[in-house]
Amino acid sequence: MRVLVSFRAMLPALGVLLCVGGVAAAQELPSPAAQAQLLALLEQRALYRDRVDWAQARADLKAADTPAKTRAVLDAILLRSSAGHGRWISPRALTAMSPQAQLLQSTMLQPPAATAATAAPDGRLGWVAVGAYLNDPALTEQAQYEAMKQAAIALQARIRDQDDGQRCGWIVDLRGNSGGNMWPMLLGIGPLLGDAGAARNVGRFLDGTTQKPWAYREGGVWNGDAHVLGSRHTRYALRDPHAPVAVLVGPRTGSAGEAITLALRGRPATRSFGQPTAGYATANMSPTLVDGSRLVLTMALMQDRTGQGDGGPIRPDVSVAEGADPATAARDWLRAQPACRDALTRPAPR
Image 1 (tube, rainbow, N blue to C red):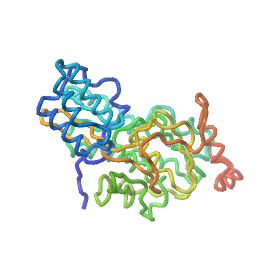
Image 2: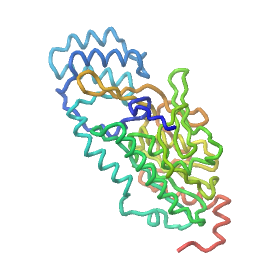
Image 3: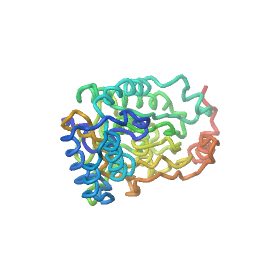
Image 4: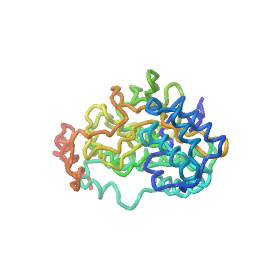
């Protein structure tokens, strides 16, 4: 039985880079009741709450005598308690996010004209670009669930369509993945996470001493014991689940994009290429406040399947200079792997 968990539970619900650019004007403020609720949530649950002097924060907020000053105090508290990942989103800004969410979702369903064949000119290599995904706040939770499921199905279909028996290795491109909701991404790349039959955990949230592992199994993704997302159409098994995988990352890889980076890290025969990620490898929840605004509350670190991860930038296994193409190094590494050395003796597919 599928358990429909709230998508405002602990997960990278809103990617940091997706919200940059001031989705709310400087003078927009939570109501007084919402401000009190926001402060209480941050003091009790924010990952870096110990970095804030809460008595002083409340005194500063009380002393602020203009909307601009009040907003500045709130932003400073959010910045310190979340290391830059949390934020407050006004009702107006939530409404304005719908078009962005719809655009990202349509891109996941129908990727741009650049195809795997042009991105990975060697026909022996599969190419999967995983972009950002944002839930549309105008939709019901059930509609959000269905949209995520369709995105994951489309992503798995792109893997299946390339997995024709000729692919000796895969490239997963996360360079443009600035975050959002990690679950459709994780489910979509499930066939590349390793041997699905092993039902192994591929990462985890860590809040103090409390751990919640992520797993991909039975055509679904799991957060601890909770089944988060799945479909009978997301059970594809790679012809060679042990094929080498190269992961491309960079400074635009943030939040949920970093979650996918971590999910692939520690997988056998896997190596990452590029530049360090954005450094927001932490998990958010997004409770709605009493005035209809929303708090993006950073609550936990994200770690890989081996328990490594401190919330900061993820450094690739192979650093590539700025301006250089990490895909070149990734292709060279893949071609040198035993599976691809054997494949080189066969003609490339047309």
